[in-house]
Every structure is written in C-alpha cells, then in structure tokens.
Length: 287
Image (cartoon, rainbow, N blue to C red):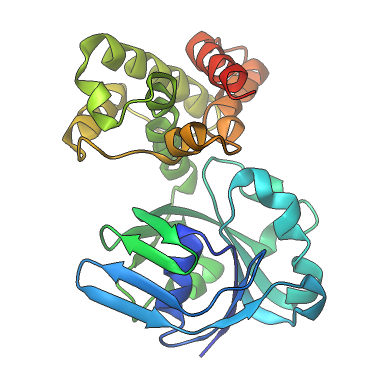
C-alpha cells in the first residue's frame, strides 16, 4: 500500500483518487472541504472516503504526489509540495500539454513523472463525478514509470509505459489543439462534420505536427486527417475542456493547448498562424 496525495478534486483528480483509495492510503488536497467521493462508472457506482485536506500547512510526506489541476493552477498546486514531498517522493504531473516538468521547476526533473491521461469524466457536484469510460494512462518507461503504473494495478485505468513519451505527448497535443474550434464556434464535437471547420482543424494539427517533429516527436502526416475522423466519431454532444471552460467563463488552458505550439514554433522558426490567430481570438473573447 502506497501513501498518495492527489492535488485537485475535479473530474480527473476525484476519479483517480476514488479508484486508488480502494487499495492505497489516499489524501485529497482541495481548495474547500468535501465529503466522500461517488463516481458513476460504466459498471456501477464507486465510492471512497479518502482523507481531505484544505490547508497546505497540514500536509505530511507521502510516497507519491499526483498533481491533477489545470495548467493555470500550478502555483496553487505547488503550495502543497513543501509538506508533501520527502526526499524520495515522486511527483506525477497529470496535465495537458508537453511541458509537465517545466511547470514545477522547484522539483528536480528526475523526480517528476509526466503523465498523459485519456479519461473522459465530468464533475456534476463536489465529490460527484460521471466517468464515461475506463480510461488510459501513459508515462515514460523506466523505474519511476513502472512504479507509477503499478499504483493502478487494481483499477480499471489502463496504465502503461512508453519508450517514446515525446511522440505520445505531441500526438495528444495534436488532438487537443484542434479542440479550439469548438470553443470559438461554441459547438460540440459535431462541428467537425462541417468540412470548412474540419479543414481548419487539419491546419491546426499540421502546425502541431511540424513543431512536434522539430521537438523530436515522430508524427505522420495522416495525423491531421485522423484527428478530424476521431472527432467525427466521438459522441456528437461531446465537449472538450477548453470549450467547457470558455462557455462557463472560467480560465482556459490556451497556452498549454495552442500557445505552446506558437512559442515553440517561434523557437524553431516554424510559422503557426492558425494556432496563433485562434488562440488570440478565443483569449480576447474571454475578457
């Protein structure tokens, strides 16, 4: 049994905490108190009663810290780390984008495990979450990756290591970057059926592919068409997190999903006009 602290009680953090609490000692670090966790899964209701902390000053060292906050909340997440991190504690950063290690510069990179997660879930109320399907996790191969995936051995989450995490992360970013068309049109996944919008999506992904290759990822040209097809095959009412945050007037992960393509494109001298333009328009619309 491992001691695990999950920072963030949203859809991802709450779902992972509930599953891990079945076999591990789990503490949820949240902004405000909540009761037990109740997850509506495809196979029934999952309940858990992990320890809940709302004060970083009361945090105690654990074996693993899982940071599941949105990328723009990294400063708040970092406030928990002095109390949670012992010399041998590892930090798993479960966030969108390709800069998981860079977001926590106060922790040595070798103690950080970047995580790619595909776990469709939504929080309906504090501690109440609907999990749409079982989900997958990918981390870099190695001792730390093996130890992290072992935490999920008795859960429905398929956790695995990969020898090429860079490619896996950029492939996920290619999917995420195209989701900005839903935010700007305020339409769900069905918007990809509009061929004009689909071509914009392909353009966004092509820019991501070019920058990703410059960063060392192996990405095929056909990925642009694949992202459109995957979106078309999703539930027509499926809403990505950027779209949901935009409509709700919440902060957005624009930098992690589109801005990073622009920034790293500039570093490599690669033009990224579509990602730049759409990120600017969505950002301006949210002011």
